[in-house]
Length: 243
Image (cartoon, rainbow, N blue to C red):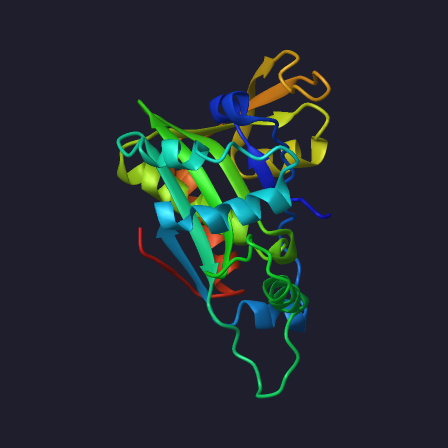
């Protein structure tokens, strides 16, 4: 299964289980099928308790070791210092009688088969962050494998960054496997730098983690990064944030 945009970060990963980090590639032109998937637009909302079954559905498709059943409920109760968002796709705009995208077909088959983890809300991604003094710490981010490489993960990161700026935060932080040179390169291009190493951090193979910090998210450099990201994504789809 393709899991290029599924990640967990420091403390929740330690408490709830193993995580991996593989960001999606930037740029590129979407084919007609992917364009159709996004034609209904994208909506971002604050995660609610009733979203958790759908969130866990996406989580199980992205992570070998999902968080325990009560983990998201516990995180949502941290309303003073945590922010969890969900991403939904609008209904695709297509010609009557046109073929459904493979992801939609798979979902219908799962529903007909009586699977309890059927995603009723067209929810395809989520992100979590902690606001700690002047830092936005990314705790988890995932995009359903059927909808990766569309820019949805970058959109969620963009909105979390904007929320951090509105709260007076100064930087973003996250961790990445030392061997994941591709991810480290992408984040460097997005204004992150390598701050420290956590020795034997990953429980599956004791691999070191690279701690990455962003540049000051209120700086002119980061303004330029955010503007470029908005422009790229707006060329692919429109979105509405209810956060």
